[in-house]
Image: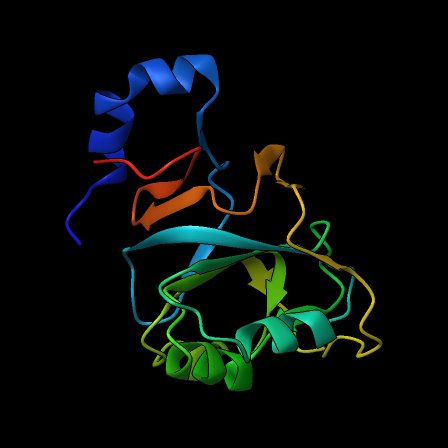
Length: 164
């Protein structure tokens, strides 16, 4: 996988203009071993509850990126070290969390990419509330299931389809 988000922005400027390619705001910190990752999006909308996150990551990832609309909450972590290991073992390319993670030392050795707003030591609830495979908004950018996520050291892109 050789791409640079800067080159994708340059090469697909028309898509940026028409809204079929978007750049997430530069508020996401990098965790996980992989700085560069991409894949089709699987989406979740949850609020301070990660039971659906676990059940999604228990499924074969097949190179997908789990994009979690956590509402930008900075009050609890939605992903931790155990879920990072689960994602790695099940073939997920990465996780993007509009919210917090925890166990950053454990996540830093997982062979996946992780982007999140911040770290927080408090674990999430476990009620199972939320929605999966729905159109979400993270940091003002719409993400639909099947959109393509491209992440590297320069940023995170959301594309309506796979880019060459």
